[in-house]
Structure formats: structure tokens, C-alpha cells
Length: 187
Image 1 (cartoon, rainbow, N blue to C red):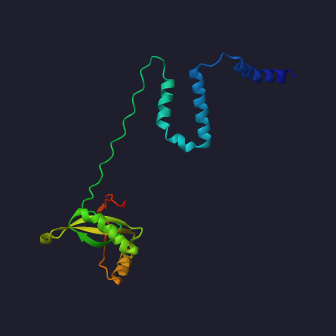
Image 2: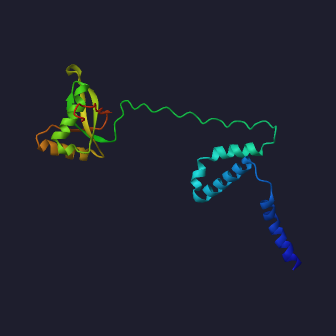
Image 3: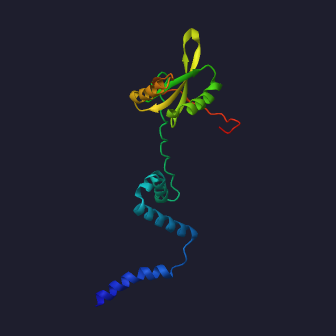
């Protein structure tokens, strides 16, 4: 019976001490709230803590450091990202269809809108424009529609358009996206 009373007293004393202690400082209350937040997050969404590992390690080092000791050395900065590869001359893995060409950039966006209005098969496709230097004939701006995952899919659209009497040629889907300028009618 004595052991049971001693065990009960040992369990109750810390709880009593916690309820009769001096109110915690704002810093202590914030630390306790942060500790609860960390524990809850570790249980509910452990992956989320992964994003804060560096900050938590730095906080731990700062708290474990002896007062007056030199601060821990700064971690080495992350290496600079590699420069983007030079893709000049690279071919696209996506395919498109060459529908028409223009000499002036100002005609590309209106031309694309007009083609979409007369060719329902273009619905849902994007447009790109790419310059083509034809030597003595000059530089033309090729209007392309796509993208298609395969050359066969691009060829299938060309076959549909050619059956309607339209010119079409499968090509790679390279170039710049067609820039749309606002028109007075809102189009």
C-alpha cells in the first residue's frame, strides 16, 4: 500500500507543480505553442516538415549553443543552377501542321483567328509562328497549329484539311506562341 501511495504522489506532484507554477513568459508560451505545432504537423503531415529541415536544424544548433559561444558557421550556399541548354537548332518532340505563311508579324494573329473561324478542325489547338529563310524569296513566317503527339496525328489533320481543298503540311511544333493583340470588337 505504501508503494501505491508513493507512486500516486510521484505521478501527481509534477501535475500539481505545473498547475501551481508562476505564469509562463510570452517567450515560453510561444515556444510551447511552436512545439505543439511541430508535434501535430509531424503526426498529421510529416512530409511538410521536410521543407523546413534546414531551418529546424539551424534553430536546434542555436538553442544548443553555449551562451557567449561563437555562432555556428553558415551552411555553404547551394551551388548555382546550371545554365539552360542552348536549344538553337533543336527539334521539337511535338508535331504540328504548317497551315500558311505570312511576311508580316502583324498578320499572324488575325490570320490564325480567321483560320480557326473557317476550319472547325483547328478547335482546341494552339498556334506558333516560326521564321523560315527561303533564300532569294526572303523570310516568311510559318503559322503552325498543334501540338500533336505523333507525326501520324498531324498527318491525319492534314488529310482532313486537304480533303476540303486546304493546303497543309506536317511539321515539328517549334516557334513562338502566337501573340494576340486586342481588337476593337474584343476578339
